[in-house]
Length: 377
Image 1 (cartoon, rainbow, N blue to C red):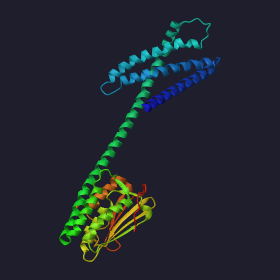
Image 2 (cartoon, one colour):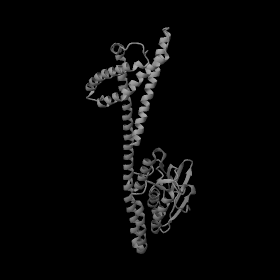
Image 3 (cartoon, one colour):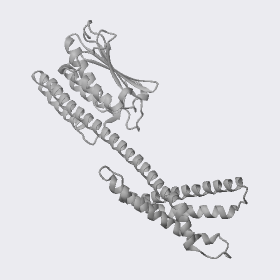
Image 4 (cartoon, rainbow, N blue to C red):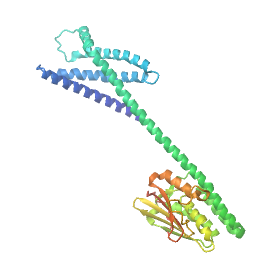
């Protein structure tokens, strides 16, 4: 309610200021014209006449605006609006002149006899048309302001709709990622059940802890990197039980721990390295390296494996077949990054230095509030 009142006072101040400028402008024009004609200039009387005219129209402006809202120029109602405003324009203009006749005694010579009828008749002849134009000028300004306001509201509504659609698509991507994560993790546990039932039971408990985090609807779409690393380490406990010779190297710069990253960002990248890199050479021993470092205004996240790598006939631009079932984690991760960061975020694949595949995610570096610490090594 308070903001509505403030807005009304703001609009009233603008109306008064506009009419004051109107009075000053035409008063100065009248003075210049009188001086150019070689006649004596009565500054006080001229200014009083025009400021009175401005004050009258300032008082009538709410009436005109009310009529403009009551009879708007809309499709299918133009004829009705024109007829109403033609009639109202003549009536309001006549009222303005009548008020002017009553008020002009303030600056007129008191010794002169009062002739309101003659004065009114003279003003109707010489001033009615100009007052009628003032009425329509107010309508025109109101129409312009309303058009601008509605255009702005449509623009805001379109932006809100676009934001809602982007959020809906982002949430849909997360919902697709959750079962993808679950099925792959359960598959890892099922492999262990034949080999070590006790270990698989412990991993199921660990999986339940992870699912509480993954399915927590209260969580934001972004978390601190240290929280994402904590989740990743829990996930790697499950995978290291499956790959006995798996070696994981976390190389994280300390300043990046508080950087904002999308929830469940690193897990699909590491899972891709395990499924398509390490699994192919599980008997020989596999290594996954996770790096996080700042590069100017960007945060770089890299996941590299020492697996067989991409086929040599494919370049980095092909990036495997990210639309296939085997690349679902990467495909969903890329879409989430695009939805969150637009052109400022990207996911790139290239041949690794040790023969495997290196996945690099680049997103804007945005620090979050610090929570609990984590060992970067």
